[in-house]
Image 1 (cartoon, rainbow, N blue to C red):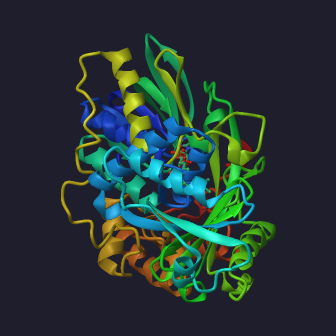
Image 2 (tube, rainbow, N blue to C red; image 1 turned 30 degrees about the vertical axis):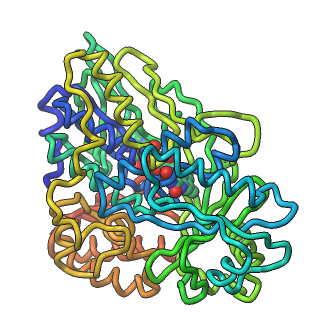
Length: 507
Ligand SMILES: Cc1cc2nc3c(=O)[nH]c(=O)nc-3n(C[C@H](O)[C@H](O)[C@H](O)COP(=O)(O)OP(=O)(O)OC[C@H]3O[C@@H](n4cnc5c(N)ncnc54)[C@H](O)[C@@H]3O)c2cc1C
């Protein structure tokens, strides 16, 4: 799948420029391209390198939002959960959740018992599985090591597990199949409007070359960065959430487990031979490009799990990998972070300019549909209706070996596919977003060396470029933090353009 070049972008007038290749921007690009709009989508780093590769990977209505009485939001997300299950079966598996309840807790068994039945009904027709109420004996058969004091029983209900970054990349592949121009490592700098056309200044963050592109409409889909984009009228409250990955042998749970912490809930989510633990929800005002899992975040999550499973005794040594992400919540300065609504907002801030913020991974398709409906109304009301809820994400089932919920086998063919068909240009594009190998494998560093060799052949890296890629990746892996902005990478090995790109100042 060809990367749109500067020439492709600057020689055309687009109906729509989508800024941000996270799940929201990718969804908008797919929907717009399917309705015949001339669409371009750009990202200043790799696609999904923001929040859309740092979520809990759940397709969920949100049992917690039900407890908050937010039925509309739960119904909307529950229906979308079923839509994604239908259009992208390779990226949606039903997942059972066991939610233990305790005497004198706010999450009482009888309330949750009713809640999960309502939850099933809100999916429209049928949930991904039927919820049940478990007594003490049944729950201890399923989770033998569970702490028993005050345990009153549990509910078992269903949501879905996905792969956030893969959902984003496959949505972009679909957008591209429908004619969208797709480019990563291109930053939106600024824009001005002339005769109803937005003249947008972009910069290739690899070569530093700037150029202009023209579009009738611009969509600001930059997630946690969206209040910083020129012309944005968005106001955000950012909260951070972290995840830890441990080996499943250390916590051999058959289903996902819910841990109640006051009004918050955390999860242990089975992921092949691993378990994902998370997440936190704390206000954040650090650098947007580099949220990280701090030692105290990690300790908090381990403590919650150790309290629920006292014999397990998880420690820092059990943590194979971590990631941290920022929720771009529509601003609400008051209240606990976890009580802020996950609703989305689509606002035309200037003629032809939309800020699209908030929401969830699960509801991305609906956000995209509503955004493109608004654009269509503005541009020409005769545009075709939305088809994204019924059209398979990828027509051909040829994604099995390269895209799924679990990481694919490490293979040269897969890496070639990511470089040629999925816009991977840096080692961490493949190791983190295309495959999750970094998070899943304890020997990810040796895998990275092999992958770098393959990528070097496919992309023509010089020795200098190869070493920069490896040391940058090693630095990411050692610090355990999410990717900082990329250094400029020269594919022809010219050391003069290998300096790091400084984007911290922008955020
Ligand atoms: C810890 C955590 C757990 C979550 N778990 C779930 C879950 O289980 N289920 C669920 O449904 N939702 C979940 N969410 C929410 C969900 O992940 C987010 O709502 C969603 O990923 C946001 O996507 P986005 O496209 O708006 O933002 P992003 O994915 O951050 O995309 C924005 C993109 O814009 C790009 N960009 C920024 N500035 C520029 C510029 N100037 N030029 C070009 N590009 C630019 C960035 O590089 C980035 O790639 C979770 C969120 C967090 C933080």
